[in-house]
Image 1 (cartoon, rainbow, N blue to C red):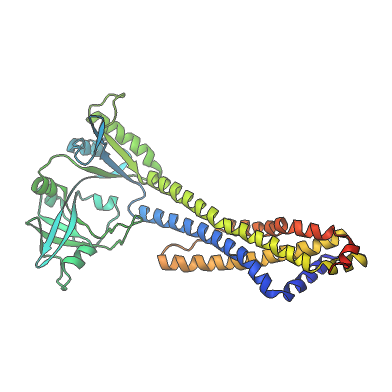
Image 2 (image 1 turned 180 degrees about the vertical axis):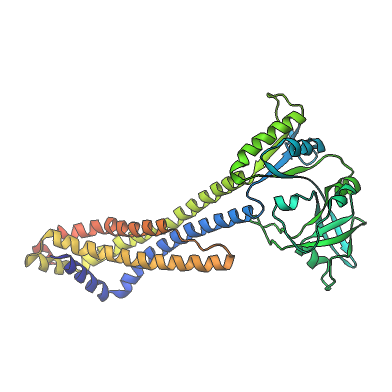
Length: 406
């Protein structure tokens, strides 16, 4: 019996039981579409996070004090005083792989303008900070070196602050807002960045000269952190080693001493997040793949029913000369066709589901070709694996017993 005959007989058998065939395919459709959608959305979310992090400077380096220990208990790093002006000056003077560096100090409190107020955090930075973090102005101007030197009461605000304090339509640039009763002149509005990959509002921010926060708000001489960027992303690791040696020297640390600072790069964050999202994607895909097993069991169940219903047909075919191989291939072909049709529909539905979800979430639309090819192969394997035993049982029937079956 030729292959086209197997396919024709299988097709006619499925058409006679359309509803049953469609319900059998449903498990395969759900399984394949779920696997493709989970893998695609996992990759899209990873890419979205990578884009978000890269938008803040792909070659950015972040230095912070290491956690303090007291009585064997970690006290955190927020009050550590290990980063100083000497560190920043040494990096500017000696680091060959660093393009720019900026100290950073933070404060939080209530912002007020007229009758409007909103809680917010202030970040005191130096002028290079904006190029390091790739932050752009929409209106107004950046503060100047004179503002930094004189601890000027000027600030740059994000879109969220504008919406909260200037909801009556007042033009913010040139206005004075109060932070804990200290007046700050708004000299610029930052371009909107929206939420980052962690769901934090990047527009709920106020930037001041770091000297203003140090002298007029916190009365401190140390820095909470230091931002820098390497000449290129590829040189980030070398830049980290170079900065580490410089800071160890300024802190008078011996080679065997535990560093009182930590240095992190965007590449490390990208790698960590990629690993986490990769594991989550694999887990979700594995859970979705369970429905493929359920679909395969459905195929086996239906094929058992089909064999039972067509015992007389099997006996008649064998009586007029059909070989066991022909009977085996007849039913195995039906199983494979159900799997492949379900797989093709599942692939199309999975791509459509990915497109819709990505559009709603604003993620990049990514379809993994490898997952589609793998899904198609899995469909074929499912048809063969779960259809083999019922087909084998049908092919081993005694023709005389099959013809006498009631």
